[in-house]
Length: 179
Figure 1 (tube, rainbow, N blue to C red):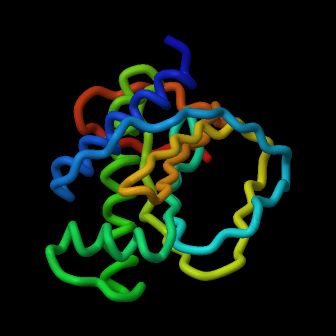
Figure 2 (cartoon, rainbow, N blue to C red):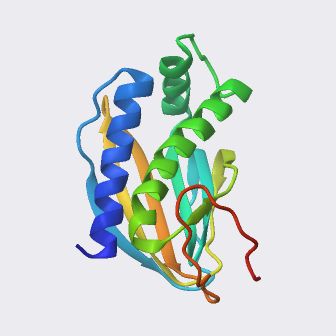
């Protein structure tokens, strides 16, 4: 199985599992596309919520979840079993945690093939007419899900690090990385 396919299948499985376990809802399987970006390319304008998490190790990249403000409120309501009427701190925290669970699960899946990977703390952006930008040329694996007619986008970009970490550890061993 190639890396793109492995990432796509892991994104789908992880997202479906998190929705089932944490939100108590079934999510139909998503549509996968691979989209390239050129260095410094900027996305189309977005409205809503985007949560980003960095991955680092011998491979590095980013995972993200993006959705409308209304879907972010629904995610929070389902997760916290309370009504979220508008995007607030609880909604942003819930979206960050859902992103962390999905991308964290994908990270665990990929470590068997790619070696140890670190995961950053999620960064969540909420607004209207904002753009995201990748600093490097990359291929993004996009998975689009429809949840009750609304679009949820999960995507990941992963590439070999310029300076690979040559030692693979087993278990929970930690070490210093040369940077």
